Length: 392
Image (cartoon, rainbow, N blue to C red; front, side, top):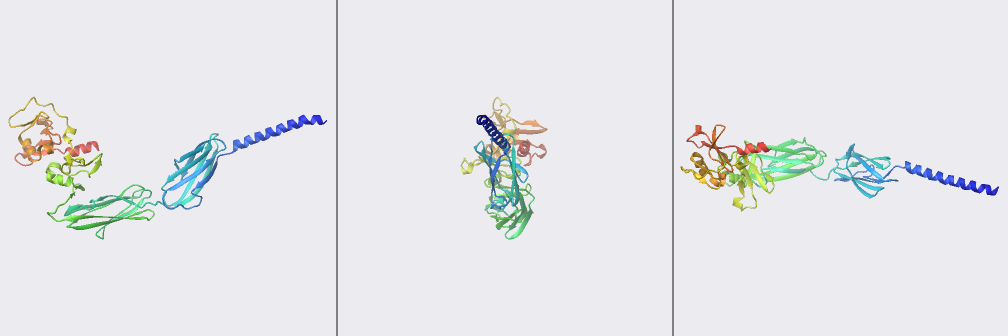
C-alpha cells in the first residue's frame, strides 16, 4: 500500500509544479508595463522657466514604444534606454502659465499598453518679452523732418498683449498684441521732428502680465550738421551709414532712386536695394572703399559679342569688353561717376522696346529723345526694382 502512494505523490507533485509554472506564465503574460516617478509630481506647481515632463517605464518583457501627450497634443519625448525593459522618458517645453494634463502610454513588444495620467500647474516662462529692430538705430543722427519710430516685440512662449512706445515721456503709439508665441508685434509712428535729442521708451506686456522695458536714443541735427542716416517717407525706409553718405555723394535720387528694402545681411555682406541699384558693404575692404554697387547689368543681361576694333568717331572704346560709348550716353557716363559707378559697357547702343538703350556692368542707360537738351535725356532703368521683384 505504501509503495502505491509514492508514484501518485510524484505525479501530483509534477502536476502542482506544472500548474504553478502555467499560472506564473499566464500572470507574466498579463502583466503590463509599469510607469514610475512621473515628473512634475501630480498636483504640484513648477517654478518659472522650461518644464521637464519625465517618467520611468519598466516592462516584464521588452518595451516597444511610448506615446506622450501634453494637453491633448502628441509630443516627441527623448528616450534614454537603460536596457530593453527599462526606459527613461523626458520632454522639455516652455509651457504657458496654468494647469497642464499629461498622458503617457507605455507599450511592450507583446502589444500590452499601460496608460498613466497626471496633471500639474506651470508658473509660466522665465523669459521676459524680447525686442527687435528698433528704428531709427540707436545713437544715429538724422536730419530734421519726417522720422519713422518703430520697434518689434515678441514672447517666446506666450502671445503679446501690448507694446507701447513713448517719445521723450509722451505716449507715441500703443499697439495691441495680435501675435502668438514667437510672432512679432510691431508698434510704429511717423513724426516730423525738430533738432533735439530724443529718447524712446518701450513697454511690452505678455498674456501673463509679464512686463519688459527697452530704451534707445537718437538725435535730430540742424541743417548743415552731419547726419549719418536718412528717412525716405515715399517708401517708409531708412538708409543708414555708410550707404546714406554714398547715396548722397554719388548722384542720389537721379542715379540710384529710392530705397525699396531695408539693409540686411546676405552672407558676409550688408546689402540694400534701391530702384536702380544694389548697395553692398564689403567689410574686408578699406573703410573708404567698402561700399560697392552690385553688378545688376551683368546679372540681367549677357554681354554682346565684342566689336572687331575701335570704331572711332569720337566714341570711347574699352578693349576689356570690346565695346564703346558715345554721344549722350558717353556724356552721362562721364558726368555721373563713369567706370567706378556704372562699370564697363557690355553692349553697343541697341533698340529695345522702342528705346535706344545700352547695357553696362551695373546699369542700363535709356535715351529719351523727347527730353533732348535736358538733364533727363538719359535715364537709368529701374534694374534694382525689376531684379528684386523677379527674385523675391
